[in-house]
Image 1 (spheres, one colour):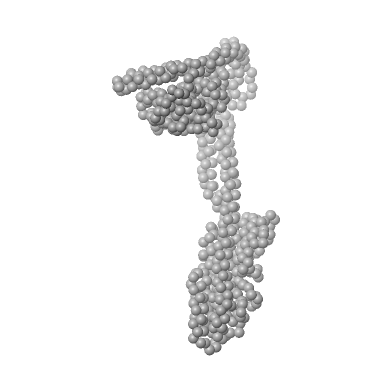
Image 2 (cartoon, rainbow, N blue to C red; image 1 turned 45 degrees about the vertical axis):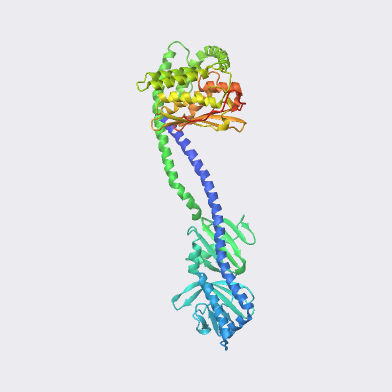
Length: 599
């Protein structure tokens, strides 16, 4: 018994764990694919946000340059101011308006710290923050760079601005632009800390970093405050063109391994400032999506193992008891003088039963063959008679229901009378020509009368309702097709429910094959897969007899062909659905439209 238990536990464990592992692998693949796609989109959007910020600065510096180039009076006023020449009132007004423009630009955006205007041969400099200052006493002595281009163009550089209020200096990104009409420079200073906070809001985690590299191959900005030479070496390594990378003149993105870690790199070139924007995501940005799956996966794995253990233990004990009983019965049969059956090496407890069954079947094979042939001939006659006579099983069950109701002290005379009247109508309906088709409306009408009788027998056990479009109510169908299916739902489905009310739905829908599909659905006990397969086999196996579902299936096959066979779907503790398709036939003249009510 222990060996049987161990093998069964291993089998159940594998059956439960392997699908779960396969599901997790498939899910992990799609999560990785989706995470990678999201990362690419997020990287592209992040770099676009950076470009937008630098574009704002570049457009403003171009605006100031164009403003001076296209306004000679303003340029003259600026020169007179910075060279301390004598100024007229008009020049003073123009100069004040220029400074107002600079202050407006600074005030409009939090990350723009200040703007400078300088002429190469002047002794003074104009600042948006402090107005006109003397160059040799200017606190920001490191602003003027020797390596920015003399020709028309922009240049960007990282530096530290010394200020009275900040003795340690402030990290700024300065964008330089040479003036068009004069030998001078316009500079916009970006507060790196403010800009870093604004742009870091677009990053999902600290595993993502953005770098900005200028024309001189210097990192002028990074969202990582701890950027140092180690990071610089890694960045240089990551920017090496990898095999298989997507590359064009403006953008490229690729995945690469460095120092046993996976990186995603996306680069974009902002041409107006000659900036290369680099988005780098470490592997932690990818694995965060998988970490959320680990705890649920562990819980499911543990639950699967526990369930496999309990199921194996239960099945082994139950099977062992049954084997002892069945073995004793077959042992008695063997003592009657029948020959021994062939024996094979048993692998589990069921092999012992199979070996003994083989011996019995070998001795009864000849009689079984004769009986099968006789039953086959008899069933052919019965199947032909199905279309030509009423369903006595239905009438017998209905009479039984009424008989039980009459003997129930809780049943009143009025209720008994109503049941008898309903039975009278049902008998009249059933005794009519069995070969005659009826409208779906009429079938439903008598089905409701049958359901009303069943409701009195199983009071409060179930509720039946109908979902049938009015346009289908005049479709012609054979009689008494739905009643056995409803009866089956009541007797084997909903009446055994204890923890919830039973529901039965009779449904009709147009079929894509040009007919209608009828279905009876319930939320009853349902069936295991083995029971469903057994029921299906009973409907198609010529060795099976039956009046209920098998009878309906045979009638459908004989009248409409294989496409109209019953289709059964069921799940244990959930419910059962039995449906079939029939072609729409033209309505007969005697049938009239009647209202469609639900019971």
